[in-house]
Image (spheres, rainbow, N blue to C red):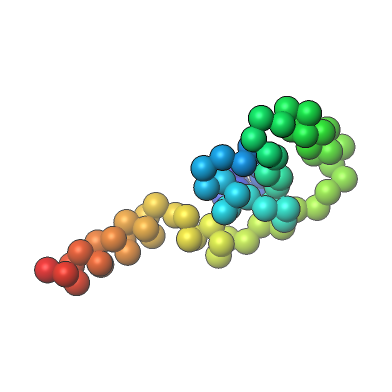
Length: 78
């Protein structure tokens, strides 16, 4: 939701977050690296980075689009 609203994201590298969050739209911190997370928060708070948000990339992770593709796939099989 943050990326959709053009807000940068700081997250730990868990699950599939590194597929969506990158250096253009936020920061992915190695798991359990609390010091690195704190450093990234400080960098964000100083506002000395520029972020780019690509709505086309986010479409790949939209549940509505994924649901439509799923329904198309099962209709094809029927």
